[in-house]
Each structure stands twice: as C-alpha cells, then as structure tokens.
Length: 380
Image (cartoon, rainbow, N blue to C red):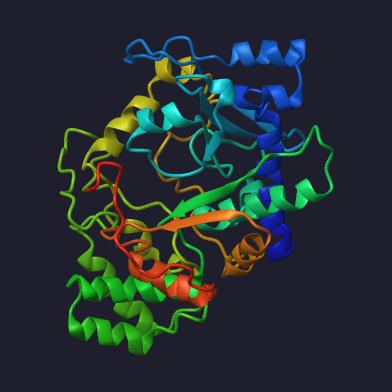
C-alpha cells in the first residue's frame, strides 16, 4: 500500500465515523431527517447517565464505539457532549487530539465530539494487529487536513441528504512538514537556551533534515539533545515536572510515547523523554480512565484490550509510510474556500512556534494582514 493510499484510508475511516456519529449530534438532525428507531435505540444505549465523581451537569453526553471496519474488527471510541444551550442550533466541533483546557466555554458554543484515533490510541481497537501499520499518520497536523480533504472531495459528488456543512478546521502546534518541523525543533531549543552553542552547531552540521536516515554523527548529537530534556518538560518549557512518586506513572518517570518526525522517530531516545502538563494532571487522568467503574459508565473497553489507557499510546510509535508534508493538501483546501486556522503556543518545545513559522513560510500563501496585536474579549 502506497503513501497516498494509506493517507486516504485513514481519512476514509474518519469520514465513515463522522457519518455514523452525525446522527448523534443533535445539531444535524434537522438536516438528516428523523433518525430511525434503531439509531435512537443505539443512541440511548450510548448515553452516559452517571460518570463517577462528576457532579450534576446540565447537558447530555454519549460515549461508546463506532465500528469502522467490521471484517477487521476495527472500532473507534467516541465521547460526545451536547451544547449546554440550544444544541440543535449549535455547530458540531470534532476534536481529534490533545486536551481542552476550558471545556465549559466550548460546550456553550458548540456540540463537542471527541474521537480517539487512529486505532491503537486510547480505547480504540482492532482485532487484527497488522492494521496498525496501515495508519501511518498519528498526528493531527496530518490527519485533520486529510479528513478535511476527504469531506471536501466527498461533498462535490454527494446528495443533499449526505452533504456535510463543513466550514473549516483548526490545528495547533501541529506537525505539518517534516523538514521545517525538525529544523524548528532544534532552532527553538537553541533560541530558548535549552541547548549549548556547540551542540546546536553539531546538530546543524551532522543532521540533514531533508533526509530520512540518521548518520552516526547525527545520532550522537541527538542523544545529547534529548538528554537535556530529561528534567525539562518538552511540551511546556516553564511548567514544573510532576514528581509525585506515589503514582506508578509519575511524570518524571513516564516516557514520551507520542509521535515524532520520521527522522527523530528512528532515534530510540525520542521515546524516553519526560512528558506532561499541569504537571501531574495526565497522571490523574490515566488513573481515572483505567478505573473499571469509569470504563463501564463510558461503555469503553468492552473487548478488554490488553493494555491500559494512556494519553500517548506506545502501540503506534515508529512509522515509515507517513507523507512527509501535508502542505499540498492545505493549499488545495485554501484554494477551495475552506477557512483554516493554524495556531501555535510559544512555550511548546515539541512542535514549537519556530517550526510553525518555517512551515507557514514554506506554504507560500499571500499575506492579507500584517503581523499585529491580538486581543481577547476583555481587551487584554
């Protein structure tokens, strides 16, 4: 299976999932017509009545599985929240990766659909182990634009009943182009005094970011680079590390099992870096999601997957079949009239703002409005 086939396969799976779940999203019921009795029955079966530890809430929520490939026993786990007010009039926001820090603000503005994707992430599973190899793109910077492209292309030849009123997408600190992301990763570390001048020069001299394979010199330099992050949170440079050793998954001991650019993913040390936020929040979440009563309430882990729920799955670690750049897809969608918001936090060393700048420069779009101040609603 080629690169384009793998990418389109993943996008197709998510598109099937979106069609399957759109009946649950009350904001689209009027467009799709009255749901069938069977659909309503399944919807009610997926309703989360009481979540352990959660106080009374003023919105409905649903969770469970949608089978996207019956022959391979492949199913993706979803969690859907109706908007707190007039959900039938609110848009549907599909969230594919990462944490939302202000869930209440978003749920007031939209119906929220969270999906654990691809297979092997979270509670999503497959009954055939070789399927994971087909899902090369494990990063939202790739599969969000790919899903958008699938919807965009499908809308051209679909009926009015199946048309998805798709407006656009947002991706933050997203891996979009291997070459610029890898260069930005190193430049950001030097610019923020994480690495020394000498190590920076060694990395620039020994590592060719436009190639896939590591030289011995690059491997040595990368080893020194990752050693620096043993006690620094790469995802949030100024966030304290979690040192709560009472937890078996202490953030200081837990490894990064997330995705890496193709060049770095071949360096084993990549998967041994500290990870986290806030700073022990991820540990608490993992403990909670692995409780049996929580899984029962969410209709999750019904097949008893042979691994625990984690923020970053180590079942999808290395890949060699991921497209090296998603920029052609973004150019196509911009030309097609979709609205795309690419944003970047400035303390993330993993996909830093430096890499985002390099990538947007490579994208080559015309600047409509020059760099300017950005204010919140309260004028800060």
